[in-house]
Image (tube, rainbow, N blue to C red; front, top):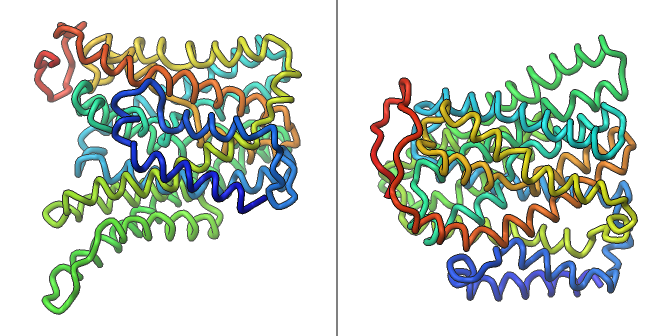
Length: 424
């Protein structure tokens, strides 16, 4: 049966590779949504995936490993798509999105879970933290492609890319807080969170990622400077850098996802002047090859029986999270985000902050560390809803967004350093 699953995934990748431009720019279905639908259509056959039952600890371990590699490739691509020096120039804006915005999304999800799901407060906090980060895989399927490039300003797309690339690793700070409180005393949990999570998993991993990105960049420059060397593909180096960083930092007990994004941002600085314009398209193709199969896996292993067994408040919760977790907050934070000059831009970026592979990664880890398997069931349902709603709304909203007339800024910027040009 494993060969059946491989054939199914490869066949879908082959078909999407042929018609990818038409899918991205014409029809009202995103590529992740198509892959999810294919997997979901075959899920009643209950393929025996190596004898591992969906929802078991062994299955959640596989989800973690697959999601880790998928996220590593995706956040590396996010780091390379950003203009060189973007993080440094937009540091204050990223502080708002990753500091204040991420925390507010966590608190919103926590409040909704506590009010609608009748779960303990720490479980609600864990669910809220898992659902907080914007997923880079789903976000890329929305903001990449000709339609998005034609209708959405670069500053908006770069803001989503930077946020989705960085917040997956930073969300570990939020996820580990309730996990530690469930398993340790308050003092022990606070000490472990400060020393292990903040200093090592986040700051230490970011430093290692920056070092690996710098070393890879210097090695690439050295290779190009030698007359006897063969032309070196930046794509090959970036893909190897992503896998090297995520695996080595994980072996050291750090956050490989955050380290990989930082490595990509630093490595990008060395690519100016030596990039081949084809690299971006090949990077996109390799990203599709690594990103999309995980949605087929999700569809095949979707716990739809568990979803149907849940009471109606869980379905209300899934919809409420997508509507309230982010759009109202981005409207509120819009005066602090120079990249979003108009309210409609804040609403657009607020809506297209999907929940996906990053949430599945943390849900699998959180369920295993706490033993609360209800977390996996609830989070996977919200991810399913996000893939469907964001995937179905992307193309029509992009076309509608591009037809809107030019708007005036809702209020002048303070210290943004960017002129208030009307949107085209």
